[in-house]
Image 1 (cartoon, one colour):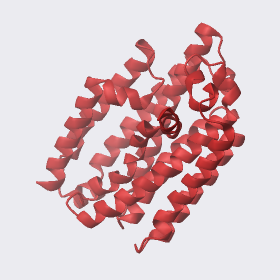
Image 2 (tube, helix red, strand yellow; image 1 turned 180 degrees about the horizontal axis):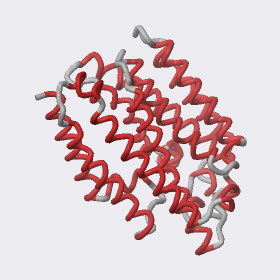
Image 3 (cartoon, rainbow, N blue to C red; image 1 turned 90 degrees about the horizontal axis):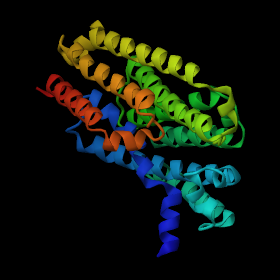
Image 4 (cartoon, rainbow, N blue to C red; image 1 turned 120 degrees about the horizontal axis):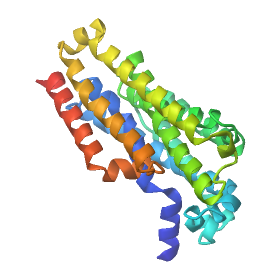
Length: 295
């Protein structure tokens, strides 16, 4: 039983919430009531979850020595010795085959396209684990591109056209969250001297604060332009989409507060799961947007 728990921790199922980006096209495309779209998106969600877990395996294998010196990461299954490196490689291979078998064995019209996106995600993240994550800024951009690929795969699977603004905002939001997480690593290094990743020495607090402010501002402006664009107003049949901007602004400001004032930006997933203010912003945004789309 302990072995099973260790393997589950290695797969990090709590991080699968990130793969929820595959459902975003259903919402913006007005297809939330289409069960066929939901079915297709759920399969893509499962495929991306398996593929993401395979990357977590490779990442923990490559970082095992650094993790053992980290105050929190030393408890990870491989770093703690609960799962061997050999077993982790075997699990990783099984997960990759499992992820690719979902679209390749399915009968959807765009399954080959989804499989291609999964392979692209895999190759990009293998390069990230092997070398690219050592380069500051480049590492964060690759992480953010992973979210864009999730979004696109959901749109492809459900045959939903994605606005360039949605793609840009997804990338910017992911970039914002990733830099906030890196900022937490900088704080850890400054307070304890622990180097959680090799490129952390190329970051510092003043730089990270400016980056978060710049990306946060660009994201808000990009979203406002999206809400007032004639194309979007025509497609959604409403000129009041801009009202939802207030919740985006409040959510980003709150995340900046959590990152800079509270120094708790290490895990975006935990923040989204625990911070009530951000949860209310998301719920209010969803509620108002749903009214505009479906009523």
